[in-house]
Image (cartoon, rainbow, N blue to C red; front, side):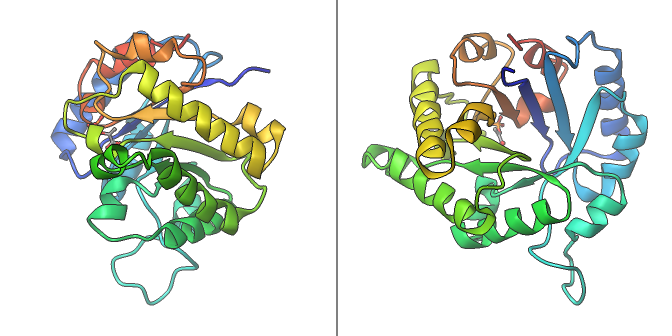
Length: 250
Ligand code: PEP
């Protein structure tokens, strides 16, 4: 069976009850292709997760944007994987570049978070990607491999519930989208990495998303690439054009 297209909307630290209710209304009213063709997930902040989950059409799932690295307890301000499961949240985004770079989450810490979240039954959208300096130094693949190595070290061969999101840091929120060729080149290398370091089956079945300034205007060309299995979308997921991005599923 082929890989089902996947479109995630990362709402980041945006929204209010009023604005997110409106956005959910837009998503509920939009015509979207069948869930046989595309899996759709949106990720509001923790506080709005239950509200969005309740109001949203059932074809669209919800995701957290982060979770704690181990069992809950005396960790002020954190939300545990168990608590997400308890609230019926199926997905969590881990290793987003804003957490790696602003909050200094290391590769190993992200790997450990992935392992713990998976062990509790969450599905993980694991983000990787290079900075502009790293790309210009020719280190794109090396950096992505280091990030993947740390995940593999923690989760072993247990990739069935992992979606990989390749998000070049220089493309996130900048309006500078990777070209379809740039995205495809890296996705192909990520798939090779999976084949060499995990297994041919995992390489074949794992969805590899592209993220970084995806819009309704550029998604169709990106989606044509054979190793682009969907998108993780920031800014455009807060707008009606997210429907067009969902419908770019091939
Ligand atoms: C993101 O933060 O995951 C992202 C891809 O953002 P944007 O689409 O706004 O570049």
